[in-house]
Length: 552
Image 1 (cartoon, rainbow, N blue to C red):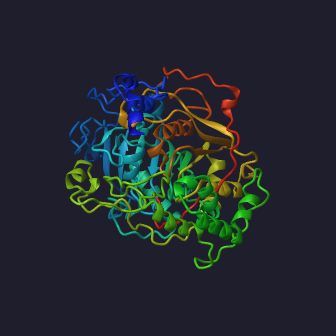
Image 2 (cartoon, rainbow, N blue to C red; image 1 turned 180 degrees about the vertical axis):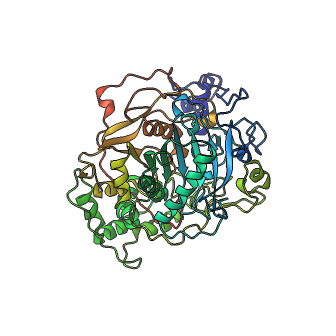
Image 3 (cartoon, one colour; image 1 turned 90 degrees about the vertical axis):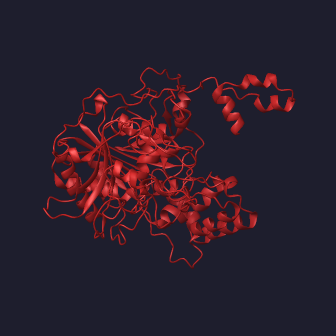
């Protein structure tokens, strides 16, 4: 497959005529892709004219990051204007609790009155993971030799800030004291007021996005901002959560686990006896009937508490599936189930289901030279740490997420098809249990095509998909996307899809089925759509799920 991909991308398919082997010719037959040309070798990198977007003064001076080529270790291109460092979570003179952030003002003319926050999950996982491997200006993916410019960088669309929170996460300072999402949100609100005052950003529309455990963080922070009733600092307009933790582990993992395995059976490679066993257990535990009864459109009723008591009653199916698949595929990645061996090196030390640091290597953000370059404290750094040992909060889907849907302009929930740490049918079940806009759940099954515009590619390192990339549905200000060909971290696995989803959140496009080009590539012609292209048929709700102590 590597050979086929190379030929398709470089236009060398004609080389089959120079090979004497008939087999060689057959290898290459039919692989030419008319719409695919070699990427442009010069990406639209940052151009500076000596001016800055953010006023330079004594408040901002200590946060300035030198982003010129080579100033940040390993980064041989200019990342543009940015600011990073520690910001206290209150206005107390002796405040020692501080959150680390990295802020990129946008040159996009449409971004003048807005700002978007990105949060990773965990709890206790750093948003610098999202920055480096999902939607930041610098992209350093698993198994690649160096960081490259990311043309799907969200700062190309809007002012972006990545924040390590709550206290105790990443470079953030202080002793973790929060024991609920309300307390985490209150601390974040204090940080946010200081941040806006420092960079003279008051009065901006605020959008909040995140993934995984941020399915708790984001709705609770939005709820805190709404409670403030202060548009000068907390004018939240929309939120977007990827593969979110919004309900119980049983609902998001165990109940949908077996149908997920059925759908992707070739990736699990289980024998008939184990497959039969997990089906029998799903039936006995009531999971099969639960899905058939309650994953309906419209919903038949509120969800009852699943018949699940403890790990010993045979109903903890999800964990047993993990144990079994690790035997058939020791490199199995719960975040992206199509992953196989070899285990790739990750500059953040977490390339799949477990930590991995090859001998002689160092975690990128653990390097002293990197820490100094980005105004971070010189200290040990880990992608995930203990920052919220106890979380007494109810699931966000109970109160704060429905409230946000009703109060905000747009709420978007996206879930990757290949994610087994939190599963898409579990999220759909959760949606069908929520009351928003005066009704419970979606009244119609999702079936609209999620369309990603065709676009210019600027490097082989940043190739990303176009065309129909999943299923979407909108009712009463809530938009759902079942994302094709993606695991847990959608902006990492499908960056062009994440870019389009952000355009929708910000109101740059009216629908995720729209055939309009990207707002930053308006000259790229899109193919004409047939009427049937706007519906995805034959898709029946299926199940996905998993339990782990940390979910970034």
